[in-house]
Length: 241
Image (cartoon, rainbow, N blue to C red):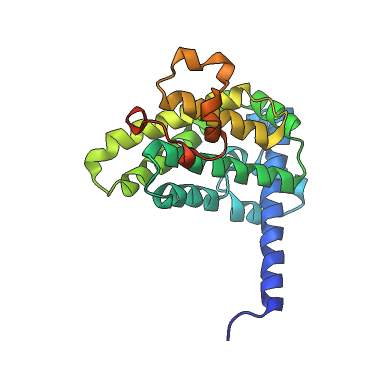
């Protein structure tokens, strides 16, 4: 006998509660570190702010660094799965672009769920990231995402380790593009603007960062399809990753 509607409803409530707790802990970590500095915030401080036990904190995060810069492991697993299983008609770079946009949307959904103000969150996190300990934690986090993408690309391309240098180069370049877009996106316009700018930046990358296309990341009229779906583009694949 399968789960009943009541069982499914209870499971849904449990998952929402877990998600809310995880996001509350992340938000408290960010707020406390922005106010006091990284070294002056303890796991106990974070747990007390959310009114949970230290044990509960460690059910979600292994450290305050992870609470600050890490995300739900399920999101990383989803990122890898999307790169691996997106249609074979997409080039490796297009698959990474599509998966990263999905990852951005999932992160946005978390912010929406938590009720956080996007602009305020970005300003606070930008300030916090200036702290040396946070920069080190962030660099480690980005390296983990880069490795996730690289592993996924190797698997997508057949599993040959000889392809690792190619996969690592695509992954590193894609994340550099995403980081640049995030730097100039102030939070205004929400996820729609961030996704649009991400598609535009990947379009420039796929075309060798040609200066005649750069015009403040504005796309030419015949490339507008790139804004909605990388798989719809019909340009010469020889220019892509």
